[in-house]
Length: 105
Image (cartoon, rainbow, N blue to C red; front, side, top):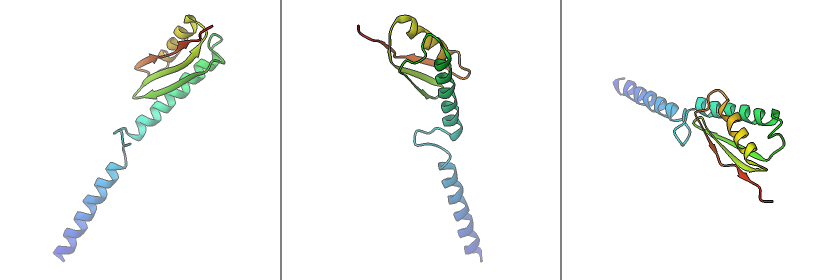
């Protein structure tokens, strides 16, 4: 009987360990962090789409740990700055890595 209790206890401990491991991504991020980053990305894309200066430009938005990275090509410096300002204005954004390039004529 004592052996059954020990095996049951060990099985429960293993189950708890595996459950906790499933709560994080391979990069060590929780599901909540991943969802927050996806929400930030969506909000930044919406702001870019709604803005007259950068609407229609091929700007890629990626977010990791509340840091937004903008990539793509734009026509001028005004669009580069505007896209960065819009991304930074989204709630939850800690930092913007503005890697936008100006198209060559």
